[in-house]
Length: 374
Ligand SMILES: *Cc1c(COP(=O)(O)O)cnc(C)c1O
Image (tube, rainbow, N blue to C red):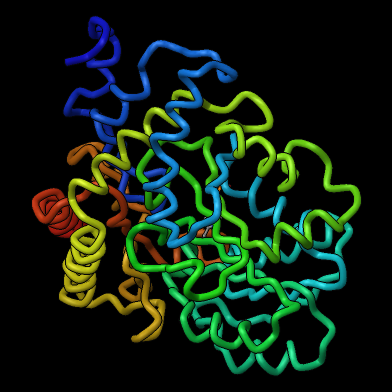
């Protein structure tokens, strides 16, 4: 039962004819999440907020695989990505670049006035541990940025092996973006020795955009405390001080946090392992469709994402027309490529709350639209 009467326009939004998003973020948000988000407002310095905060911390820590507090940042993921650079890079950061988001992280480092070097790969290639090892052995670096799941190319880099290399360099902090893989596949932060693990709300967590989540190791917190000019809004030390009082430095996106609370209920009801298995299974369904229809994978085998498929448009279909049919007749959308591989690739997401049934329906729609395209 809702604590308040339903809002009429809200149900209109949820009508069956809305466009279901199979783009790799934002993704479909459940009616349950929207309902949770439409709870009446509370004061963020009130006991009610502290109770909300405390109700989600233990489960967030379990999901992150950490004993550290999980900070809630009212920003998209880029806020936490930029914050990690500003709080942790004193000497020079090695940015692992193999797609749109990771390439941009290098530019952001420079724009924050940090010394940075890009470990550059072709788009579609994974980041490899041996290359990082070679770079770190120079002793030039005190931080590494890694995008675990490059959403622009569908490449998932071997986080376990990369983290193992970083453990050889205790003075080098490992900053990991798990925006499109968080909670879909295991990334045990403390066990791997990850110094910052960050994610955002609108991709793997299937919430609306506007909330970033991150946790920082003791080493990261010590580094942050020694860095001048961290600013205020994204200061790790401020986040920690406030976390100790079950709070955030500035007014947080309370509605989204209610959504997160509800999402955590979903995740723990399903079970984390079952959630991981579901993502693998659904991803395999999409993969099969791609192969069955004569498309090739953009990412090499062994390094493919479990939350989306990025396919080469090797049949040179008219992706704009394809998506137009999908939207008009089937009320759904996929993505027609990102950045410099727009039109050359297309991406289909299986993030969030998708089920075998919804993925099967979506794939049937793709079949129908492909046939119509001729
Ligand atoms: C979408 C995405 C981002 C950026 O997220 P914003 O919410 O737009 O800040 C960063 N990293 C990855 C891997 C992403 O998929």
